[in-house]
Image 1: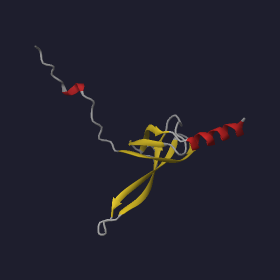
Image 2: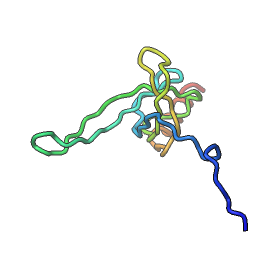
Image 3: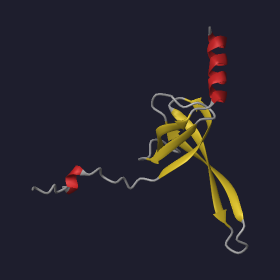
Image 4: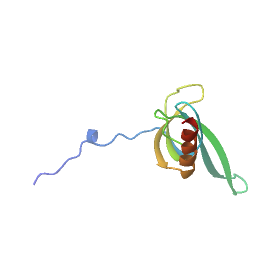
Length: 109
């Protein structure tokens, strides 16, 4: 009858870095994507839900994200003048990005 005691070191460390989920709107730079995040916030006085968009520049090491993908980005150290985020994962692929990449490959061949 031995009780299993969990040690604090065995657990996954909790990351304090901020994460956001948004839509890729541009992949024209090398190893950089532009992700647009839609934020919804209640107006302080009128309580109506307002939408606002903000663009974030994120580092994409493998150039794997395409336009229209839904991605998760995470805060990182400053990598350039505007880049302070890195691509964590691609949540959902876009069929629109697949069509555009096929056309680009056809044009280069």
